[in-house]
Image (cartoon, rainbow, N blue to C red; front, top):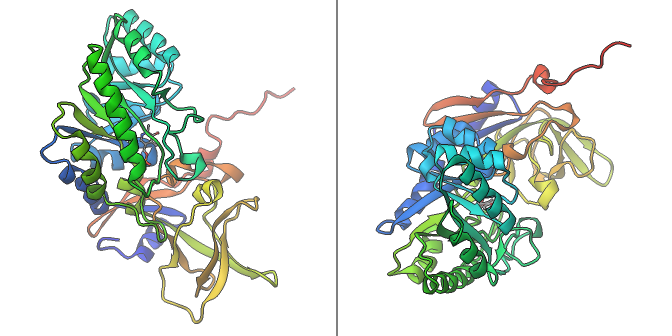
Length: 404
Ligand SMILES: *Cc1c(COP(=O)(O)O)cnc(C)c1O
């Protein structure tokens, strides 16, 4: 990774360990910047894909805005030096306390997902004597053709407001005293490897924007969400340039600022998870490589049947055999990869590729496993950006009952 051997990262920081390339994060973000040159835009990195404050700091220094989905993410962005004026706040369940903090720091926009939320936001802003900038997240009812758990733009999903009902909700929003209607947004899903669903969603959105304009509601921005896919195996995910080349002409000549919320496409292929082979075993019909990373460290294979490349980082040892790469957790769903041809021995370090997005952020302490260390590689420098959790960390906040 950059100028550092992955084996050296494992030696220095132990395993399991996440490592991210600062150069790759920068390159992936700048690909969006370049493709948007000459067009008013705001790239709001989706914090949930990788929320380490050093990752956020790297992006803030590049001028990124941020798409957040919780108060915790808001505080992370502020801690990392992110500009509150460049934050959009998504999520279906923001409560009054969340809204109050976001109003006080002056975020760019609330991406409102329901009429009920709009009423609470107006009441909260009224109490504070502030104006809440609002975009309505509309559900354009397009099939993102991705895994059902990360498909969000269909009528049956919990997200957003039915695009057909949106004009009426906009009318009501515009009549509220402490709401300032400034935009519209959608997010139809994640790991999209085709451009057509985005094109369909933008086209539907623009019809709505024009309809709103005719009603006297003039928007300042159009937020086309995130969701651009990446290559994990053999997917042919479009580049940021190809994706925007398809979408920007459809918005040519319009005055609205284009807002984007990419997450995975910035961080996924900028990170790896390093893990050590604890034991090899065979039950006769199957070989298992038991490694020290588990589903609590990397949930994607268990949750989405995601395929992620696994390769040894140390020199090859003899001939390949077929292994299921599994972790120490007591669940049959605890695997990182199945039927992988690997030439490995006990003690080898394996690299799980494309682990920079939806990796560490989804990790847990299941089976009382301390969460992994995180490291940022910058040229030949290795920076620890999160210490491995200790056994003390595991019980932090827990208490024994008083003695009877
Ligand atoms: C998850 C999410 C994103 C980012 O999706 P990626 O697939 O990581 O690009 C953007 N916007 C919203 C509202 C999200 O929920």
